[in-house]
Image (cartoon, rainbow, N blue to C red):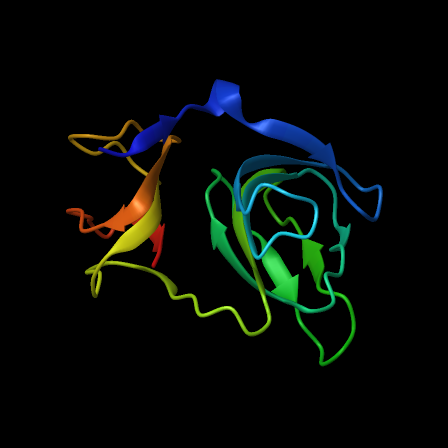
Amino acid sequence: MPRIVSPAELRPQPWKNGGGVTHEVVRWPDVEDYEIRISLADDRVAGPFSRFPGYRRWSFLAGPAPIVLEVDGDVAIRCTLPAGPTRLLNFLVRDGVDAFVGHGPHPGPIRFAYALEPLDWLPEGHAAVFEPPAVATLTRHTVWLR
């Protein structure tokens, strides 16, 4: 049975670059030097993203408005918000840690799922944390980490 994480349980943290706040959903292990961190970032103003050397980043649109990301080699990612503020679901995974992030049909056991739209078993905007990893029925409206 997964642990369901509601929006009220998210841990707010200031952005490293001082430009906003992210709301941490989960990290493994739950220490400062984590291997995986999943969070929701409220993108309210255009500008650079914080850099996380030694980590890979995946970002999924989880808010109502589009976002344009400018990625240019080894410089910080910059965003513009053509229709106003929005929200991104971010996965930070330490280099060397085996992780698969995606949506749609899943290839096997998962550790985390986030409902972009309501599911039969998971309300919209809620996360499911599977410990230990488990096989779950996921749809194209779910983002997950294997």
